[in-house]
Length: 289
Image 1 (cartoon, rainbow, N blue to C red):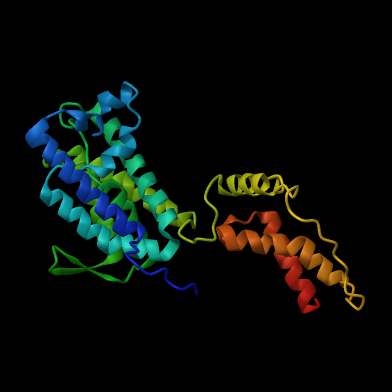
Image 2 (cartoon, rainbow, N blue to C red; image 1 turned 120 degrees about the vertical axis):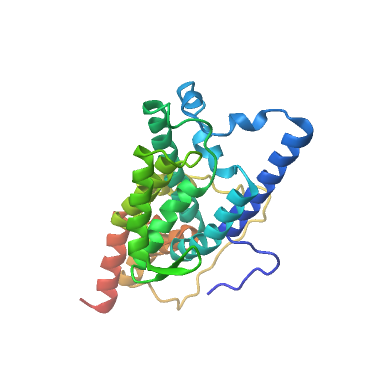
């Protein structure tokens, strides 16, 4: 219901796509002219991870091996990312994508360590997290039609099962080297788990979210009031006929208004279970139950 701020206002999905393109351009320029080797510390590999390069679990998701690889993920993000963002908001979509990609990256490094003869090398790409976003789309739109290879129509739920089986097969039958099938599979499974937990609802708190929101809200309420030493003093004279607040009004002002302010500032998903109970109690009082 808020008015658009105007100007060039990209969604989270749009910003991610811009970042992918910018990083690919910088990587290409470096590989041709400078050859610093900096980017190898951002790609994911089992040996790097075992040496403590844990940041690679995040950074590998922003890199791409080729222009075809980049374009494929951009198309997928435009299709699936926009849908998931419209469903649960940009911040939660970003958390989901990074989380799915991290789970997929961990799985890929485990497979590399277990089968080093068949699986190895650096892992790059946004597709592990994208597979999780795709799982959300397919589970919530089971009867939707997906054009396989842009030609063959397939029901979304069958596409999900088929893609999972495809990844599982080529993990143990490595006939397609150069593709992180384990990362795709576990990104996909992470998306399935996300839906099963109901986290695609923006009002369903994520693990630890209630505690963080409660802590932030308490810290804000404990901020010291602004000094009034330099401000002119005023004497407030109450209007003599001002009505006294009724008990219900006192309850709303004391208990409900702070919760409504919190919703306005951080969204309804930031409420704790106790605050939700207070709102329900207020609803019952107002309706006369």
